[in-house]
Image (cartoon, rainbow over all chains, first blue to last red; front, side, top):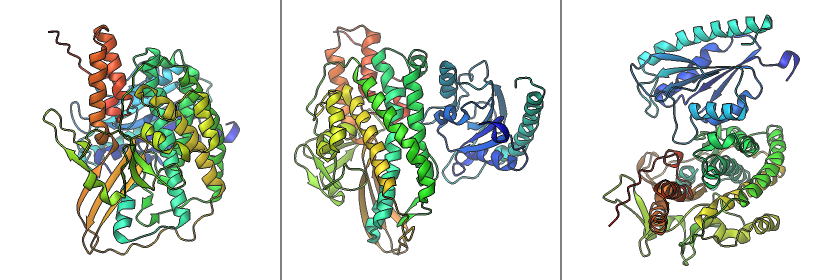
Length: 166
Length: 358
């Protein structure tokens, strides 16, 4: 992609809105639509993390949003910079049907296909039942994470405009 | 898809031919993405001596990137027809909620042409793997259709002569509990363990494959009936090439249906269906009341049907491999389980091996 169509930042929201707090990513994606510049692409994916490598292709900056099993306090949001380090063991979201985000990131690193800048926002979920809504604590985190991402995207684009990698 | 077919059976719905073709196309996408994942990301590292695909990718980057691209094409088909790439939501009783236009399918067809080339390269790559000598006299069970390689239609047949409709499944098969596991095991009432999945489909339906696909199977040394589960990776590879070809054929002849759905009329009834998911036959039965409420249901996934075979394989691999060191034996045992493509939660490193010498 070149010129006006070039995507500078990809935001990938992973999750299933019909499975309680697994719908966190899509809920954040909804908040972001219309609030980020055209150089930013928002993509919703239903859970196949392995597809991320093909999704981000050559896009230099990528932000991933996903839910994870609770490890301390449901609703708590963790931000990980994965550009140079893997997701810590124990927090990596996993799936019974596909590779998880942690495995995918390390596979991409091994293939030399990691974006120059890769960040993940993971929320600790509370309920993942079929047909369940977002839990209150996770729903409360949606707006905050969306604001953080708007701000982070702005910083990335400014740095890009000044010719610095981000 | 089995669920939709079973409810349609209960309600007496016959879907239009174009809908049936679209469902077959959706299954092509399922087979491509599921097999590509299993062949390269889960199974290949076993043959090449790597603990996982991440370690393998450093030395076999081309093969891994090829698999990612193949899988992406399968995902695109699933997303277009199913609404999303995992647990599709667009198929409904009587048809689909939305059907694609020819223009929407055109770029997928272009991607499938490249995917077909990649699938052949991947198959030839796996044909060079070192395959352990191993073989068992399985009873193969798969669907069989009068003129198609089976996906979402056909009778349930076996290599021992079984030939039944889906409605008779529970007459011949039974799920049972075992004291050492929470997983249900499905067996033939009269003969016990049986094998479903790619090896069974291929053994029972090779004559339904186009000549060029059979020639490709011959070229990579795949025997007409493969009884070595370590070689199942080749059978899956052949099926990926076939799924690409079949998807291209279905797209080339596609005309959007005049209606997306046959409107269902609820009634009290029982419906049955069996389809060929990538891992093997998937049986569903539903009993509905007059307003369409499901009163009870039975679902038998392929992995439950292969449990006994997996355990029997494991027993033979373990007992014939006692001269191996424990790490090698453990790896061989895990590989023998992965031969049958259980879902990924069971396919990662999981095995605790304890050898008791007496």
